[in-house]
Length: 344
Image (cartoon, rainbow, N blue to C red; front, side, top):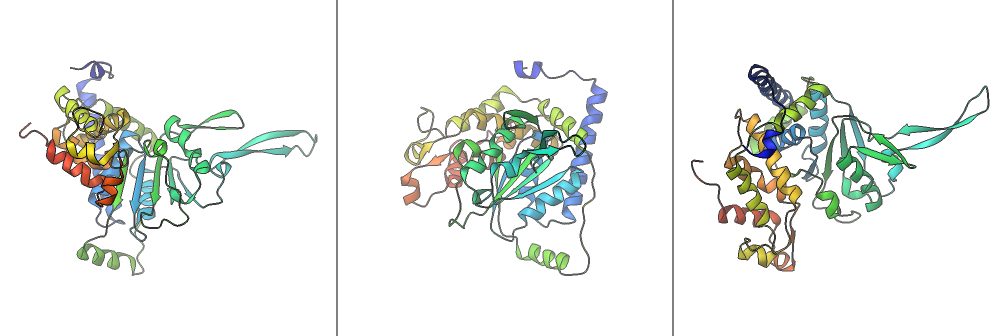
């Protein structure tokens, strides 16, 4: 057993089984409730739930009308958490996100004091809608909150509620009037999840669900305290050194400067995944294992999550752009070049 696993809390086996059973029951019920409102997008829902159970943040990239906002709002309802939404616009200021100090006067004494008025960031689930529509100065106001779970206003430090979960959306096709997210902020997101079009049958279900007088609603099935317990439970899932090494090898192979990287990475990639990418890949695989009713991480968990974890962490060069290659294309080739071992 690795040193990392030896530091996990020791639990009675009966208590551990009970917590795992409750995790799987809640996961199943969350999916059932969300399915009352959201049609299709199984991979997207899985990735958002993995991010929740890991305690990470999720960037959702999708075309207009693909139910990005509805998905996040429905998740908040199902989880019983406080939901806040920020519509990012070019004139949004950092204080509009974090909150600000105002001067209040006591009507009896006339004494004036500074009072902090919390901004919308003080919630459990924050929907940062169209995050690429606001300038970098305001985007960076989220950076400290996402990494440190806190914010600083006029030199004072304020802790954010736990759990704190940012789901940011962006439109991939509209470039005019948008500001690409800086690499440092992109790296804070566990996943870059892509919402695609639904199938014809799924679109028919959406029409039947949304064009009648019936309004679909999701009911809460858990609470903040229980979710924090699930996040601790996920970190206790064991992973074999060989599986963890597979995750590290995949991330290192995305770096053109690494001797282990294949020729196509050296040709098309300027910068590869960071150490944070490997950390997130292993944590996400642990959550996926529990969600799939397994008690250990497999090579398949790592392989299935490699693209959404790394697609926003590799920076392609002009050769890739000229040949119209995306980060997904490079990562797909990488998984073909280094496939998961069979029967392992």
